[in-house]
Image 1 (tube, one colour):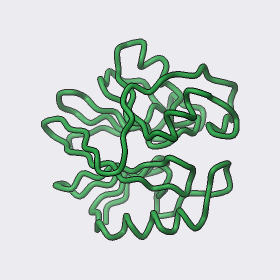
Image 2 (spheres, one colour; image 1 turned 90 degrees about the horizontal axis):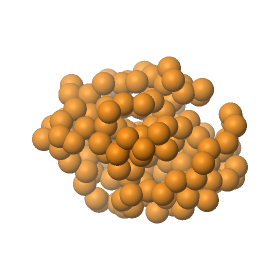
Image 3 (cartoon, helix red, strand yellow; image 1 turned 180 degrees about the vertical axis):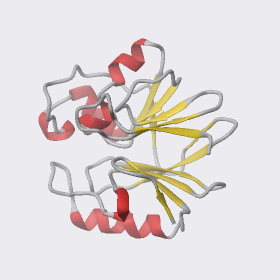
Image 4 (tube, helix red, strand yellow; image 1 turned 90 degrees about the vertical axis):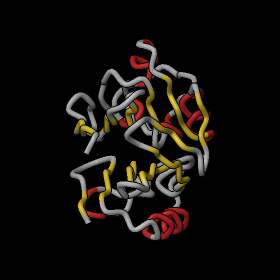
Length: 182
């Protein structure tokens, strides 16, 4: 696989980030710092956006859904769910939506809107390799994302999970825990 997992050793909540090699280098979630030029946020929770400001200062472009972009610009407890201190608000550089593609020579990631864990959550699907980068929609061991945080909705999560299983992934790269090989 042409990507590396960072298991959140730098992040207080140990969320996974993935660095996808190629030009440009693409990072999924900002729970760790890398030299990626593009950072795609799967959702607005603190542990997935932790290093966004620092990475923006190094020139990385931040991509996120409209709901996540609004949440990080306004940065409050209800939308970003802080567990450790506060963060400074930031602007997303590119707003993405269902069906958009983020590419380099090794990856063609398709954006899939997956509300349920929180509003504005997305997953990224690499069809050729059948890899699903699931954020917190699906955790390791196939456990479905939690809905007890602000913006969570059990019915929406159920719909999102059904949509994802139709893809028949071979690999699920979750926002927490180990990669799942199916």
